[in-house]
Amino acid sequence: MQEKWMKAMIAAFSAVCAGAGAVIAYDSTHFVTREYRICSEKVRGKSKILLMSDLHNKCYGKENGKLLEEIKKIDPDLIVTAGDMITANEGKACSQVPVHLLKRLAENYPVYYGMGNHEYRMKMYEEAYGGKFGRYKKELEKWGIHFLENERVYLQNFNIEICGLEIGRRFYRRIHHKPMEEGYIESLLGKAEEKYFELLIGHNPDYFREYASWGADLTVSGHVHGGVVRVPFWRGVISPSLRLFPEYDGGMFEEQGKKMVLSRGLGMHTIPLRMFNPAELAVIYLENGCGNSLP
Image (cartoon, rainbow, N blue to C red; front, side, top):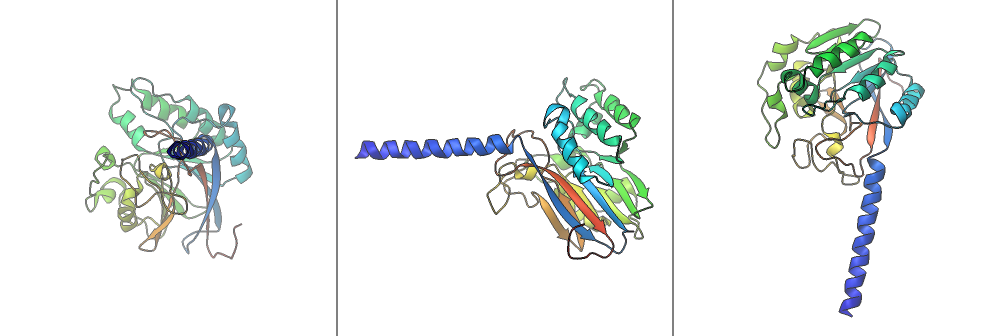
């Protein structure tokens, strides 16, 4: 009897492991498209924004053909990347995957690139990375991509100001959360413009309250990879900062009447898997005076 019970337990455990393996294999190699809708009296007309984040040199099909095909179907007005499109590994920071993808996208759409912790690390430790950040940035800018390092770009047609925030490395420390001092964002970007719809690219969503207090009408973020492994119908389990059940894991959040769309990202790093958490392209519809359905 005991032997039969043990065999049954082993069989059940093996089935669970096989099922989990299948989910991980699928979610680690596929992406989905999610849509978000935001209304503001500041916005002029309607705009469709594609948010990409945390590619980490990942490819979907040959030369990211599957991503390009899906983006062509979406046909956004503009593309915003929320950082970590590249992975910074000392001595081998490969840049060809994001460069090729973004170059192809820039042929058809305006692209605004915000800094993540990996870009920041390559920039700060230029010697360790052999000057690759400078070459990477120069290559992207050659194709007309707007690289925003604590810089702002105003889009008159939509009355949107895109602000690319680059925060210090201390705000990406693992385990412990570093408080952000009052006035820090203003010291980097200046004051928010009340008359514009302020779209802030802030890679680390942990500081959403600070972004909202600064005046960001919409923050777009990444970094958390959706919590890597998600408990179905609940939330993500762990962030790349190795904090359990992060407050912000993926989706849309609101604070002080301001919104944040947090991408679950396209690639993997630190914990190289996904479970119940496929990669994501996020489409944000912004308009003045919303109806009842998506455009």
